[in-house]
Image (cartoon, rainbow, N blue to C red; front, side):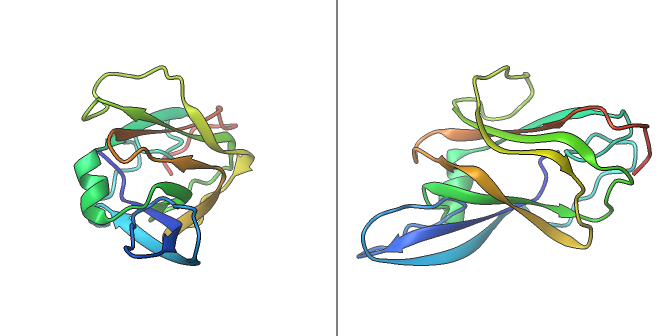
Length: 165
């Protein structure tokens, strides 16, 4: 299941406003906007795979946002923040937490993709905050080319013990 994602971005305001979960740099005034991809209503069970579930101590999640989804939502070309809606936070911090992105022609993540990826966020330890969108400032913004789909991968190293959280 593709998680509900919110991306904040900055976009240049000139003759037209080009928006989405990306940031477009250029001349002019800059504005920040948040765009949500997904309904925000689906949740996973405590033992189901999700980008932050520690039931198996470690996980690698991949999903694809199609060009149509991205364009229809009005995402700009430079993505600076990325967030997941967190209902329940894990009980342990997630070591080596990493978000990677890449352009892809795939329309879903049914086949695992080994990359190469652009590492857009990395933290030695991350503890998601429950109760809404937990937004992460990307350490390397991702530039969407405007024509391809985006594959997102989130992974982390094994936590100290498995837990249904």
